[in-house]
Image (cartoon, rainbow, N blue to C red):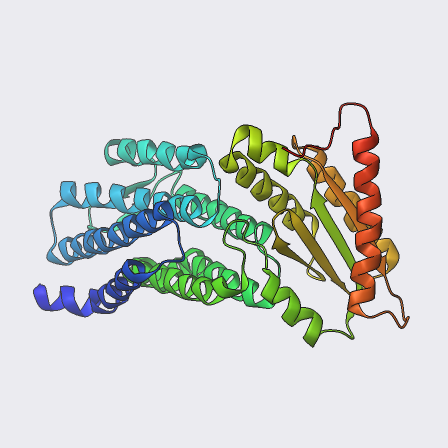
Length: 359
């Protein structure tokens, strides 16, 4: 038994240990995210032990009651773990993302006595009930939600899309391979998810130096590198400056100011496409670099930003510079865009009730 346990789980244990060691040395993630990742590591380890115990009892024969309980745990744990991955990796996800998974736990417990999802036949084999595919459907829905939220909160660059795609592939394999390999796939589910999470974590750490720690947007250094390396492709800049940040910081505190910047950054990421990259240059100054786009595309981007921001309690001033095939360089485009943006800001403060706060 011990030998089989080691053979089936050694790779998973090694990756989980490496994951835990790297987490203990990282300074790039907030404490809450680190604690949640530790919880995921522990959950995946315990889950792998439960799966091994279930299959070992199946091999031994008998132990029907114990196997039913272990099956209920296995069918419940997969959606719960997937929901917890969403809760950990996607920022600001509400707690009720767990509600469907918790409902499945209740149904799985009921299934121990009714067989509505699973049961064990007289020959000792697993049998699916009327709701036998519900756990797979739920994991599939959770997986789609995870990928959607990660892409929605990304800067949509290939370097960020690859680890998300890798994570997507891992979860997709968890939905397809059980029907190809049969129930034996459950024995490699944990290591599959562990490796996918580890790869995503490593890529995230590699990208930290390019990102602004507060907002998750690309930082000033990334902007300089981008405009230096992609000059020929860049044909538009959109500059954005938040209205009233100083007033928020002085009257409500810097925590409220940080929340405002995070909210706006999320609006910008939602509004952009793969041809547009958002940077935080510092403070409340942002710039969006547009590559090979028409002026109509740029105006549509600004309209989307204004729509997203209007759904919040904040506002911002926006300007842009477009270069179809002209001789303007990046500095000239920045100056032109800034001038339009400052004009827009003056118009905002000229309206009744919008006073410029100087502290």
